[in-house]
Length: 273
Image (tube, rainbow, N blue to C red; front, top):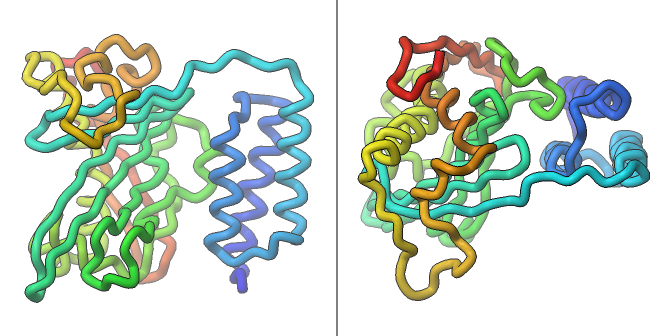
């Protein structure tokens, strides 16, 4: 059953999309899919007014002349000390890395993904339990941090409320073995900044030509482009350059709602001001 806070968030998210129908920026399919996922994760009924309003938004968008969007591109390669998958989608980038290890004599493997908007700000941090410490959870996905109403926010926001998972997965120890010895605000900031730091290291390796430009071995995705080709991606590269120049801090009071604040670092070698 959705809480009052969830209903308030849902109303703001849907109203922001309705405003964009008339005032822009343009709404893409992923915006509507993300809004539906938000409603499902918070147990809204499929018959609720919010789902109906999303359907109306989708119909309005579909009735307009088609606007050609850049195709989704999927890159992969070794950089920043690990294998990186990078997806470039219209106006955002998703960067993913895999981590594995052992905890309490059990092996596990996870994939952490950071989605950045057009101005390099975080939309969400997601963890996929490829091999969970609890086998029944294999393949499940946990949204660790999700900026509230991110499809409707202005891209260059400096502070925003976010939903943070109250109980974080044990598998985070595969990323940082002392993760659960940190304060909650420090851990959440670290999770967000891990994406920004990975982007910074990736750009450094790309500029220096230190990435593995070849596809992985058998069983890989044949449509995946070499990571070095990101330097020619007109959508992804500006997003990455902005993300590399940012770091966040998180304020929390123990509830699911936190505040993410961005600070801009000193000028980097990638031309980001």
